[in-house]
Image 1 (cartoon, one colour):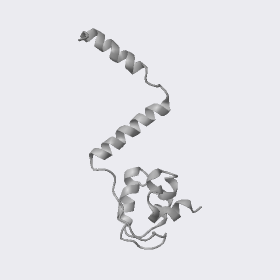
Image 2 (tube, one colour):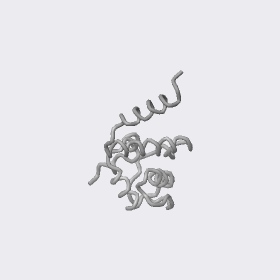
Image 3 (tube, helix red, strand yellow):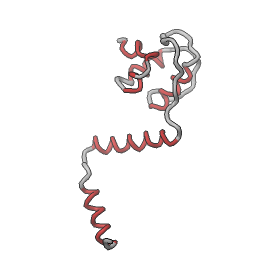
Image 4 (cartoon, helix red, strand yellow):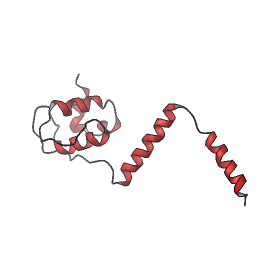
Length: 113
């Protein structure tokens, strides 16, 4: 068994080998954030149904708002059942995130310009 001093030195050496790039550090923070979300049960799921259209009411809209809030695209999860401009803009600003690719109920809006 290695001595505590050798073990401590080995830990320092291994830590120094990690990339020092800002992008790597951001990825580490994002991974920690997503692991925290996973520990709390994961992201809000959105019930399946017909494609949601801007300007129309949909009972799933609170789920969409909450999910956008969890992802950091809305400043609050509150709001009604209307697919309004705020939700539309949040979905567009989410870019090509994998989460929306798996949700055909919102797919049309993502690709509208």
